[in-house]
Length: 399
Picture 1 (cartoon, rainbow, N blue to C red):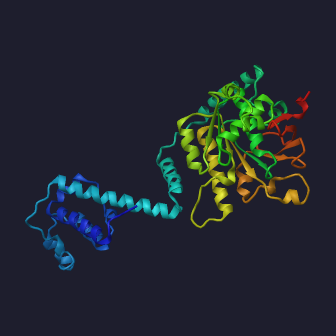
Picture 2 (cartoon, rainbow, N blue to C red):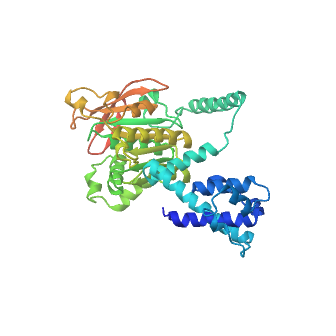
Picture 3 (tube, helix red, strand yellow):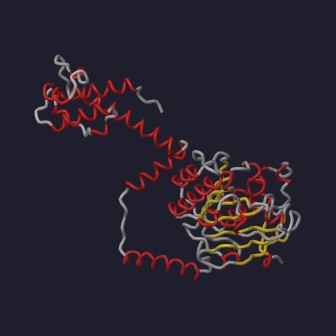
């Protein structure tokens, strides 16, 4: 961001000081302080002008070399308040530009600077300090809402149409969940199935893809809901009206975003415009947040922390898919928490970590390993996977 050159900046500061010398009452028309000046000499001059009653050039000449302050001798010009404020506003604007440049330099890029601004706003916003009694009252309301949902046969948390899954996991607004899996094991398809299940139950869902464009995602949705081979939709073997009728089942409940350059800032921008119950991000390692001179571990740790904060801030469930390293594949074993690729912060931040496992890419038997559940059970939920339909269904529900 362009700022004044050192020469231009000093000339502007000198002009403002000269006008204050001639009319000290101008200080009352602006909240100017010593910190508004960059030059060390100009800071000293401002302090002297501010602290000296009936200040004059003669008084200043006793304390400063007359050569240093010769630019202040302008006896013929009497500035107006308007002229002074124009110069002062120009000075403040240049100060703001310097601040932005410093913050951006420290943050590494402009996207991280937006995070910095959001954090600054949060710090400057007065906290709504609630009493313990108020917390108890709100807890009581939440308790009754959950009891009512259970009495009516619904899930306590986010509605997902998988019975055993719901026994193990009840996802609530503010939860940050991670679905890990090796490459090509079905992470995107499973997370899309979760999004479809939730949307069909009436939940408001956002599916954010960084890897797969709309055509491929919609092909998968149609195949999943119609229980037909995905190639029929991929190669337009089905009439468009058929696909349209299928997709319209989700209208109003599922929003799709293809954002290959997505960052956590972009996710917050989406959530600030519309309320969602579930936000699926596919996938974590592709998010483009960057910092200056950061390792991949630190970068992903920061992204994971931002996603956790986003879930809490917008009171929604954030589910992000994540790549696992190849250790489980090399050792021919089931995946575990330590296999989450590149950052231990992901495991630490997540409220729930699910690991999708299949013995091989041809196997239809799938296991969802609930490896971490901050408030709930851990264990395994068995699924059957139909790769042609892109369809996961709980094993105990297959007739």
